[in-house]
Image 1 (cartoon, one colour):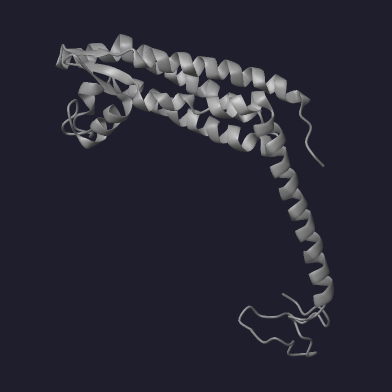
Image 2: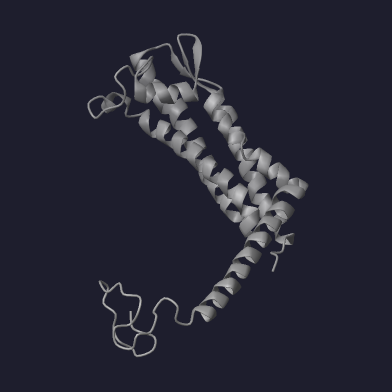
Length: 223
């Protein structure tokens, strides 16, 4: 930092309010102009905020299709309460299955570790893909929420597409590869119908999100 009047270099350890050479008050120098610039910037920031919130209301809530898009974006969360596996005649929902996998329980009493991952090799990729799919669906939801404010409608469709691909691949691997691995350990283990419902929801959601991108072209950002 240099003195704005005489140009004397101010050391970073020099905390004096006045310049040691010319005595200029470093804090109050040109204070009125700086205050005027900050007030102008504050008005610009406030205008940006009001425009952003107005865009969200106009294109995220008031528009019926946009409102349906917002409400339907939470549908992929049904995976948490959908049955994904049948064990000894009873089904287990995904959330319990997730907690069971890492906390120990019916299927994995010892939890996942480097020592026991080998016997679940065919299962792990499917489980990972379903987790990635749910994470991508969550990102799509947040993109739907903030999309109208920033006029970004494409991000949600991209995340939904990624989630659908992972869900489909995970379901295929779970049904045609993982079940064989799990059944070898316990013949009473089989996949449940919840995975198919989740895939159907993700596919329908992706199609709607992609079509919404073209629909959103009628929207124009506020100045």
